[in-house]
Length: 120
Image (cartoon, rainbow, N blue to C red; front, top):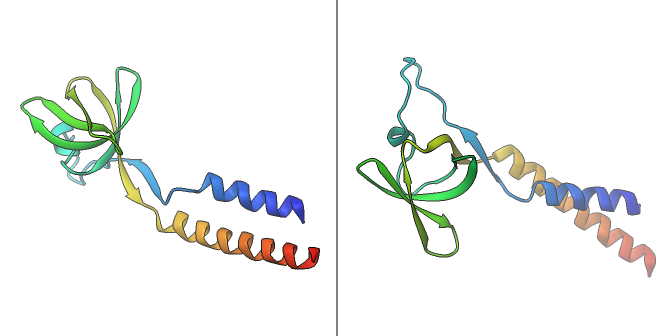
């Protein structure tokens, strides 16, 4: 019983976010998108700049430079050159992950309640 409870809690921690970061797909016509076309303002992305990964909220483009908020809780802004950005992943809501998390949470809660009732 303790192993099952631990397993459910571990899975809940692993799947704690309902968002995933996925690479931006190229359009069907085969054209390669530029960085400015991939990153839209007011959306959250994971970008790679000089072998460092940043989780950002894009604010706006100023010529060839992206102004982004690097801390999603504090208003810390940083500029990134479009030439420095090597990899862009956009944040998407994952229905599957959300559903799995909900089911695991309910099972863990039920298991915990049953465990507490049996202990009394």
